[in-house]
Image (cartoon, rainbow over all chains, first blue to last red; front, side, top):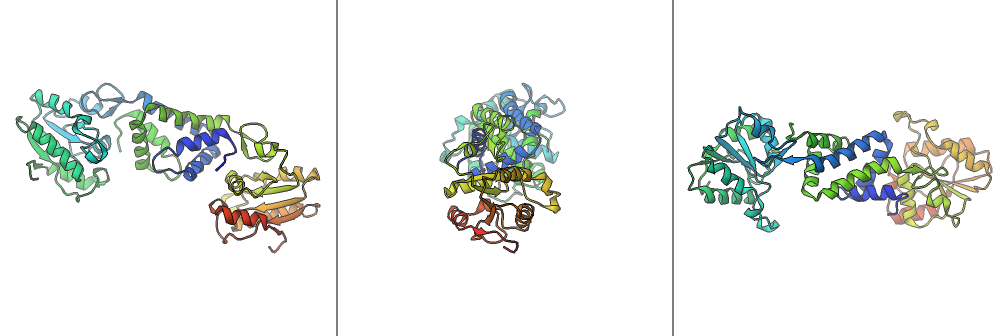
Length: 203
Length: 203
């Protein structure tokens, strides 16, 4: 497809680099932006650039943050005794949205997946170790997707730290097997973190 | 939904302002960008801003262009005798893609649609008048969508200029009624512009 303008071609090319957006959709989006006031595309462009340049990772939990330590970790009303291990930022947002959890999080940054070449060393597991070494954490809660990879990740962490004094639990599987955590409805997800179960090798 | 970071919230907000992209998809796209090298989001952001600030409209045909006059209008090998009237830039691209048309275009910028409050005065119809006044255009070809609005637009233009010496034609309706022009396959679209028919009131 030949574009009448190089700036249009470039924009379509960049937009279609996003997952799930093909050339035709990218062109539609570009033409949509051209029909709107200039300020909209400028604001969008600026906020995408700011997103990657200004965002920080919380040094405590690896959640996204605007400062060194995220609002959740900096909140003294939240107990350090409960540490909820999640795969990714969207899971933190999903659990926060239920309003049922008052502990802290640890964002792994993924799950163990040999198929995608993601081993334990690519996840923030050493941060769990640091948290456990303080002796403050009483309970480590797995809030991982009910998939093979989620289970493998939980098992790996459990094996690694089972000699510590921490209690292991996992969110109640009210969620059907194979489901991604982020698509669970608030009520089920809230209930499953309240009714969490002790974690054992066969669970 | 509460976001862990204001820059993330802002980016999601801006992305979900695009048509067909909801908050969850916007978050997915933002997190995708955060997983890529920074340069990708920066390039995307820059090209969106450049798109709206640098793009020009060809003063001859109203197509997008990088200069005052677009490549098609500036091409001396293309005949001025054939003027193809289209609704929008995507239609120019679709017809150019067939490689079957060697005349010039006129981009209306839409079609007459009383439902959407688009009257003839919002379209580039005065530019058709200017082109016809030169006496060079021999044939005016309607390449409009086979919809009620497309037909109305063609009829309006035909009525306005039927006293001029120009011949009217319309692309062959190999395309089924109700179809949008841009989704037609290249072969049908190429054939339909080659086998164009004389335009008359009942066509």
